[in-house]
Structure formats: structure tokens, C-alpha cells
Image 1 (cartoon, rainbow, N blue to C red):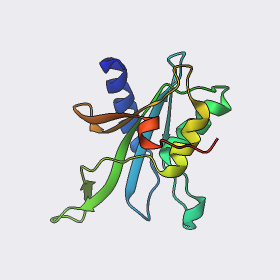
Image 2: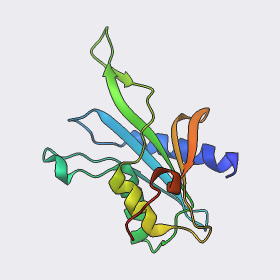
Image 3: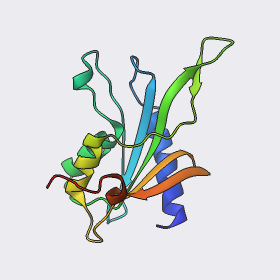
Length: 144
């Protein structure tokens, strides 16, 4: 995977994170995925007081892409994690932990494998702080 695509996806995921709605958990996440045409789709997590009705950033981005006719995903970057309280003013700051896709998001991703057969998963705190995996590394036995 090309470095410029990785960095672009991380930047777009970080922007999407700013749109997250997570008043209950303070766990803000943004995701950006790229499809074979090169188009990028973003998403953020959206919580609900009834937690089961919440949606992850990854699935938000996936559903946006699918709703516009996309059926294959080459890579997805995820930026996020818990916010921790600042000691001085009651504000919150990022914890520095990586946000990995949950099992549901991994399973949904497995529906949209590219022709190459695997999806790159990038977990990041920034363009210089990231890890790259393949979906098959994170979920070796998908349900299909």
C-alpha cells in the first residue's frame, strides 16, 4: 500500500473523527476508506442513549460507500479512541490508544473484499503513528 494513500486516509479519518457524536462514552472515532476507483468515503461513530442503536465509524463509512454503488473496499483507516479528562480545566484530550475495528465492523468489511482478496486496515493516531494490518489478520475466519 502506497504511503501517500495511507497518509491521506489517516488525514480524512481524523477529520471525520471531529464529527463524531459520542456524548456517553467519549470514545470518538473517524474512518476513511478507499474503493478501487480511488474515491474516499468517510464516517464517524454516532452514539445513542440506547447503546444498541449506536453505529461505528467504520460501518458509517462502509454504508455510505455501498449506498452509492460501491461493492469493494481496498483499505480503511481508523483514527480514534477514548478521550481522557485534562487535570486542569475539565477538558478532554485523546488517550493515544489505537482504535481497532470491532468484530461487527470486521465482519461487515469481509462482505466487500476487493479483487486482490484482502482489505488493508490502518489504525492510527496520526500520519506518523500508525499500524497496518490485513483484514484476514484481524478476522481469520469470517462468516460467509
